[in-house]
Length: 416
RNA sequence: GUGGCUAUGGUGAAGCGGUCAACACUUACGACUGUGACUCGUACAUUCGAGGGUUCAAAUCCCUCUAGCCACCCCA
Image 1 (cartoon, protein in one colour):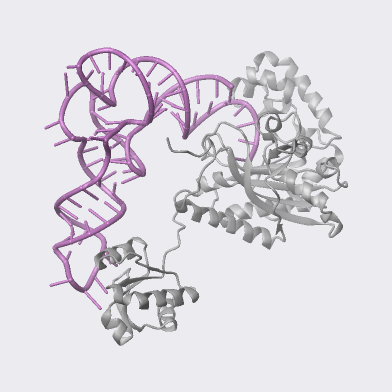
Image 2: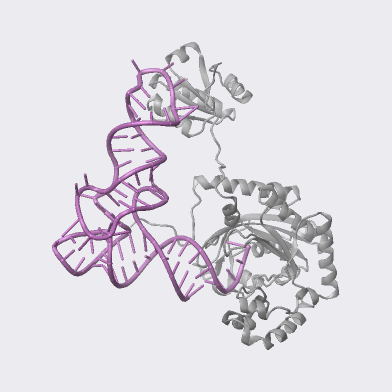
């Protein structure tokens, strides 16, 4: 039996990679426009980093991490998300000392041991962005606008933005007890999962899809009504700025996040087109994270985009690059000329293809067609002798005579 | 971790106990001796996810395993 890839680890084949480049380039363009710089951090970190940031009791840390002991007896973990590593680097290199505001983005593979399904894999890719050093709601709004711009840039209008506020360590505990009080009275009406959630993560009962639970939690207290003065003002202000920039959004007071470090503003970009994987991007504010990791008390906000899910939404659009010119040769005698042209044209940024195996002219022309070359040219004894050749535009079959000189050819192809 | 479904060539698929395992696309070569697309011809699975079993006979029936997909949980 041939060796296959690990479950949930996928190959991105040449036919798909064009779509990935398209997404990545759009993100780079939009993020750099907003003043973000790329940071590249390792795919593996000390296990403790994730326990302390994401939270020991979360599902991610409890059962989804690729954790193992390396040969030096250290517990290491393949990163399940990007923010923790970026903040570790931020603290370790004291980036906050160079500039009070830091805007970073990253892209790369993340790893979570889950059962694969549509839009969910064990190795998956995220593009994320983080602003640290600002707690002004204006930065929340800029981050949200940037995220929406990204989706606009790649031509996706369907996914929509939902926002919420999770409050802060001041007001969340009070809300949590209020919610628990409410749920306790209706515990009998909740599904088995929600009864369990009541003990582990009561907020989760709010986005349960079981009809009985939806019914039972109607009228449950909302976090938004329990925000403290500062949090309330912050959230109002975020909405104010979003309204100013006419970014469409809706408020989802039942939205819950799976990572412990989130505070105040949280958000998701959701789609109805990916089955149960509705979130294509998500994030939030994490004002306590940096100090929790041993850094100074600096606030932050960021998001991550799920690349596989975005790629799925983009569908089968063709992103492949096509050759400008296909050079066909009559026989071995012309291969020197063809190769020199290939070499010269490539150095002039013209995308050229030629036949490598001395096949029949018929085969070569078929290949030119299949590769969707814009132009083709046949080089035989006559052309080598005269120094001129007929260049054929493949779309309509029209031909033009051009000297077999790199500059002349490059110019002729550009004019079209 | 739990459930459901599916496994036939590079791809999409017919076949439902008995001749060389349809067909379409792809690929290769040719009809057309210096020009693609359309057309036509030829070739391409000793083999039906793997391993056992039933039978004179298995891709077709039974068992085990493995993989994939989808859903739950959770998440990007």
